Image (tube, rainbow, N blue to C red; front, side):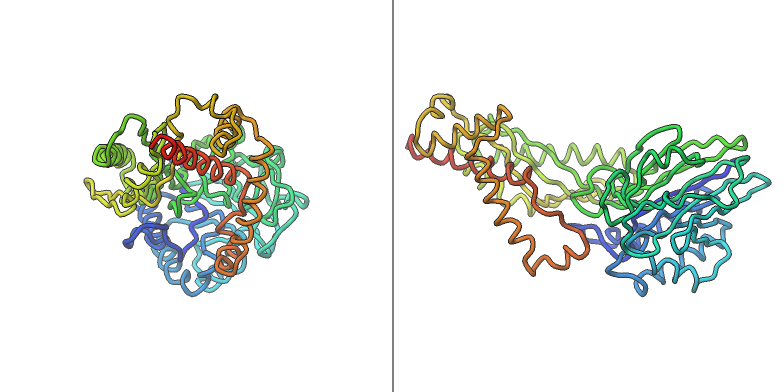
Length: 425
């Protein structure tokens, strides 16, 4: 018999997926899905790699669902091994201590490496881990590496939370090389919400968040299933559990002449993409789209007016509701004489020259000045009191040069199309 393990991280219990209504958007719903999956698929262990509780919600909102879940797992003989992250460094230990269930094990409390053994029918797997002792940790835990009680005869799975290869991070920076040099056979990591396999031999995985929480977390999310054979070989597979999917669909509009044709194209593309996703992801209940308009058009502003109301779109497929949260334009002006126009000193010529340089990968001095000015204004907005709660929770990133360039080039395209329309009217 093998030992079956389901692993996840970054649940942020108490939060809900953005731009989605319904109980399935809540991480409490996700937590219950994880519990149900463990029971229905005869898991032996549930491994949790930090930030199970969200900092903003903390103890009182999390303790009830966590306790019920742990008790349900206990009734079915399923053990829980977990480490805390930066969001739940104090709360997770408090909850585990108050619940006092024999199946729930917090590893590496107070920032000390620890090994705990799980045994089933004579087969043993070791869980090594380290838990955040404070909300901010600026040095690698591997500076104090050591696994008291580690036994090289048995496979070892590492549970850890932090920022890999990001020196200077306040959320436990450590190196991939430090993981590779350890005695651990499989590393399961929390903190980064995008699921990703970083390397093999040994396997190193960022588990990602089990539920997609915003448009910054696209594609499929879920948990990782690890199976330890009697000979100690560990196999891993991803399990898609998220009920929410965020996705971008690019809609070419170059040959479209009217609003009805554009609307039909967008809806048809969304429905086809949604049905494909619904077939691939059996747990899916909501898809939230960003529609990106691409191609060339002579009247960019008019095309954008045609799509202004698409954010109200909402349609039920077989079981999944699809909606649109945002329209983004990457349209370029349909001009035959862009190179010729770029030679003139007119406003249209300056815009055309800037666009052509950008297409060649050149950032002109004019564009550089615009980006610098944009960043000053964007940073002013970013640091305004309105966004303080998001800054504290680190849920928004500061404006970047890349964002500024995209914004400015889009505006250049829009203005040039408008000027060209005025000149030709």
